[in-house]
Length: 412
Image 1 (cartoon, rainbow, N blue to C red):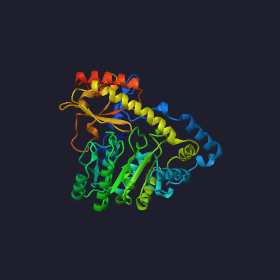
Image 2 (cartoon, rainbow, N blue to C red):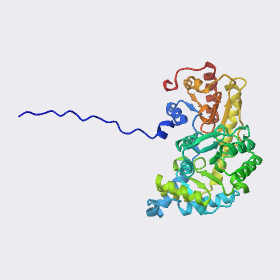
Image 3 (cartoon, rainbow, N blue to C red):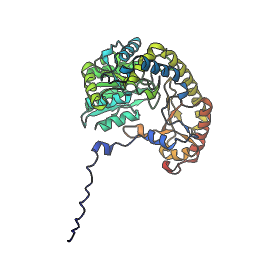
Image 4 (tube, rainbow, N blue to C red):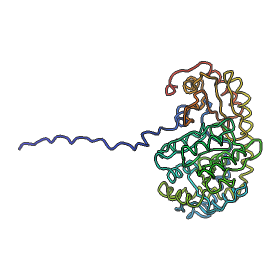
C-alpha cells in the first residue's frame, strides 16, 4: 500500500490591523518612562503624583467599610452612568465651586482619559476637525487621532488660546470641538485668564462649537485666585463638556473620572461606554463616595498643594543654573508641570539620550504639538521628587545638556 504525502496547506497571514491602529503611535511619555524605570533615575518626565502623599489609610478604610457593610452591592455590576451616591457627591462639589450641577448631569468614567475616548466616539466622524491648544495634552492628541480626526492647533501666547485666532479658525475650518486644559495646563502649566475664557465661551456660542474643558489639576492651586470654569459662562453652558478626575487629588490607581455634559451628548457617551466597559468598577465608586462622606478631601488637597508648591519653588530656584543661558520657562500657579524653551538651535529630543545617561529625564516638547513642533522645548514635572531630589536632578540635567546629543534613547 502506497501512502501519498499531502502537501502542507499554504499559510495565509491574518488580516491587517485597522488603519487607525497602524497610523497612531504609542505615547512618547510612556516610552520614556519604560526606559527610565531604573530607581537611580530622577524622573521629571512622568505626570505622577507623589505617592507618599496619598491618603492610603483613609482610602483603605473606605474600602474596608464598603466591603464590610455592602459587599453584595460593591462587588456587583452597576449602572453605566455611575453609582448614585458618588454622582450626588460629585454634583455637590461641582455646585459648591460655582457651576450648578445635579447628579443626573454627570457620567462616571474610568479615569478622565476614558471621557476623551467616549467623546471622540460620540462626536467625531473620520475627517472631522478638532481644535486644540499649542502645545496640547499628549493623550488627547492620541484620542482624537485614533478617531480619525484632523487636529488643528489654535495660535496663542504665554496666556494660552487667542480668542480672535480661535474665531478665525472656527469660521474657516468648521470644527466639531475645541479641546482645552485652561487651568494649569499640561504641558505648560499656564492658566487661561478669565477674560479669555469669557471670549472663548462667546465664540463657541456665536459660531457653533463644542468645548471640551479638561480640569484634572484645577484644585492643586498654590497661589493666586481661582478662575471660573469656561462651562460657567452663559455663552458656553449648553455646549461645554467639563471633565474631572480623582487621579491628581485622591489617587490615580482608583481610575475614577467624570464628565458633565448636556443631556443628549451625555446619553451618547453612556451608550459608547456600554460598548467599552459597561461601567466603571462599582467597588471603586462606592469607596470614593464613602471617602468623600467620611474624610475632608479639601483639607487633604490643601496639604498636597502646599507640598507641591514648595517643590515648584525648588525647581524654579534651580533652573537658572541647569538650563543654557537664554532659556525661558513658565511659572505655574498650581498643577504639576512647567514648560521650558532652550535657545534656538537646541533639539531636546536629540539631547535626551545623553541626559538620561546622567540618570535624569524630561519629556521633549515636540510630541505635544499638533502642528509644526518647537524642538527646543521640554516639559518638567516638579511634584514627584522632594526639593533635595529636585536640586540633584537639575544638577544632573545641567551636566547632561552641556554635553550635547548622545546615543539613541533605547541604548541609554
